[in-house]
Image (cartoon, rainbow, N blue to C red; front, side, top):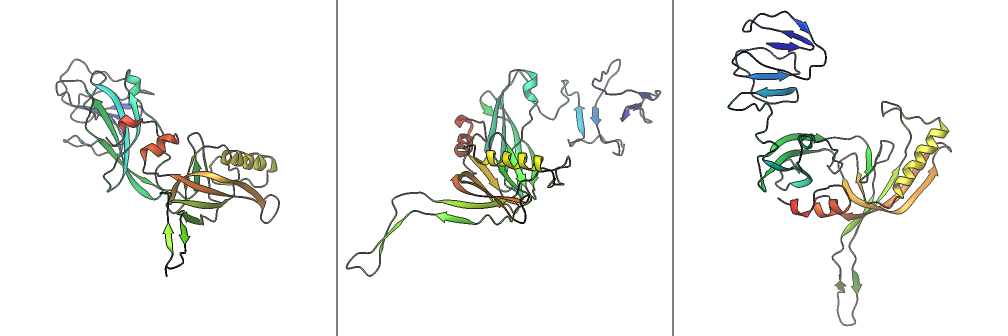
Length: 306
């Protein structure tokens, strides 16, 4: 028996029934029979065959196999056994996981998880994992692969995300390694003194921020009121004193603080404004401590490097 959109139908292996239109199906009940398998999918183009597909994909809604229980999901844990759900990610091919969230499970609604990860590097492949904590021990990793792509310059703090494709994307940067050269009287070569472990970068950014249409692509340069309001919002964001993430179009990423306030200058005419500012690298994008201190991940120290 199959569902075609809102239509309930049957194939040659099912008991004949009259097609019935039902809108917004939210509940399925099986009764008065013996059932070996129940699979529900949104893919109406899938070929019907004798063998039922076992793989889960984004179209799969539920798949009950009735192996001594009524579980119809793709996980083997429930509310009685799971204390926490942790969300992790790592770059494809790497071994180090970064724990993004550790969520306590108390009600069935706690299994409904939705969040945005702004810490991923552009043009990079990742694996994201949902991991149950059962009796204090990590359970099976449920992993999906994600390719991160962007065609904009992006700045984000823990509360806001700003992006623009109106940038030279140069992001000129200078490495800062504090040290001092001392020339002594009787030595041919100088002595280099470095009394700090400081080793970071300073990045110069040039970008324009214009309001866009509903599609998020078409800019609105001629509406002065909207343009000024949007540009001022970008400047307030850059001056709000919060640690930020800076991403380039080609895959660079830094954990930064805006150390030189933005300069708002006209380029060709008074409407064509450009913001220029300098950022200082203040941490590592691979450090859970640095990301936690900046507010980008919520998992506390007890969950790091598990």
